[in-house]
Amino acid sequence: MIIVSLIINTIIMFLVLNLGYIRKKRQDPNYPDKPFSHLVLFPLALGIVFTLIVDGFKGVIIYQLALFAAAALLLYWIFYVLIPRK
Image (cartoon, rainbow, N blue to C red; front, side):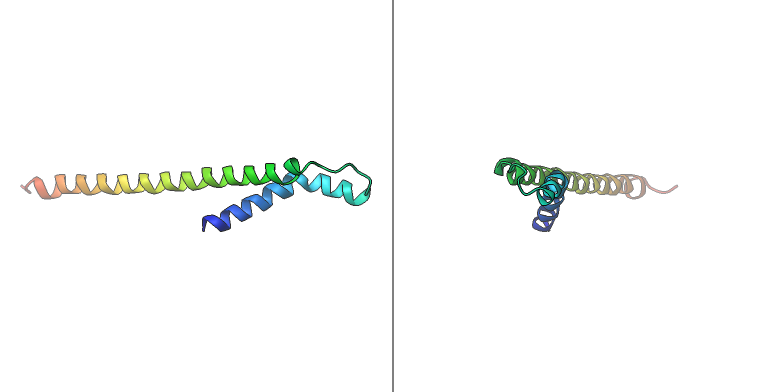
């Protein structure tokens, strides 16, 4: 799933950062070429960083849900199992 997310994020970054350049280049073929690092490498790096950040947040959310479940089970055990009913 991370591969699909990486591909989608990279394509989105590529389109957002290069759409104006592609339009100008189609209208005027003599428009100066964009360096490879600006054309491909920068959007790729942004796509990788964005994917890592988003997947990191997903991991944190799962960790928080696991902690909440553990705390809920502990509180249930304390209030309903350890404390005898009167």
